[in-house]
Length: 391
Ligand code: NZQ
Ligand code: ZN
Image (cartoon, rainbow, N blue to C red):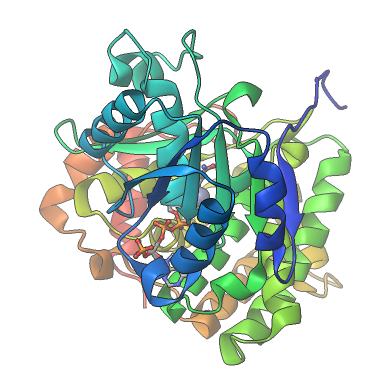
């Protein structure tokens, strides 16, 4: 049965070829000072920086830049951005990049005028902001996180060896997001497939929980089928607009809060992945790929019916004459075949995980309550060990 909920997504999306043409109109809603936030320079190589800057100039904006936002943005960098935004008196933060740049910009938006300890308030106590929030707009260049239409802000505290995501409420969602699938064409294959698995993982995290009949589960099966289909095309033909645009839209739907309404969700794969990243700085989607199969094999007996449904409805496994367990295992083995076809990392050793790090990674892993099995510390270590054996 669906639980009670209130649903509102305040982000306005502009999607499609030349979507940047809508930026000028949006900018009219904000004051003169625009803090332009971007990453390590990909947008300078592919021309997106020039496109955005020319719109900002035509609109008469005063621009200050915060560049060098790294994948897995750090808390130290967040404080630097907050100071810059406050001193500049920014009226809008324009994030041009992937999930890291968008997450970072949301963090800056609530940190700039925060009078409390920013880490403790937002990333330990998970409080909502009670200070002025600077509005954020996004121009998305990498697909996967859904950050363009949600309140998520994942930040790494390198001193504490913690990578923590705060899912803020509506006041922190981007006010607008510009999604041009062609802006993602220059992504290296490693990033493209990592993003594809991130999308898959977001859907699975919300699908593998609960036993009730829930509309969201049917929606998610459709999203997963579309993603599997389009990813198989994109991996051999990366400039295929149809596939890349479908993947981009699926990513947004996977984590714009809609499919989580009224149902339980898990998120343990993300907790494991974030703990690995906190110790290795590995690419987000790849950390999820490396732990997913051992995790799902471990929890499968506790949610067998759902795993059977996943196998049949998502992976087209023929259920005739087979036990639920056999069907469910065949589903996971189809998923493994697909992961290999894309070229994802299945073994956490490839991400820099070493046997002597396992205890510390387990200490950094938050244990969630919403999935089919609440993990013990020993199980977390077993999942990591299993991943390190994968071929
Ligand atoms: O920094 P630059 O030079 O721009 O290069 C980036 C970066 O190295 C590059 N890139 C991005 N767009 C490109 C491009 N290269 C060529 N052409 C383009 N068009 O790609 C690299 C990865 O970018 P990043 O933003 O780090 O990737 P992603 O979008 O996967 O974001 C990952 C971050 O988002 C968090 C992750 O934990 C991680 O920190 N997440 C945020 C979530 C949310 N807000 O809800 C949920 C997710 O589960 C996730 O945790
Ligand atoms: Zn993710």
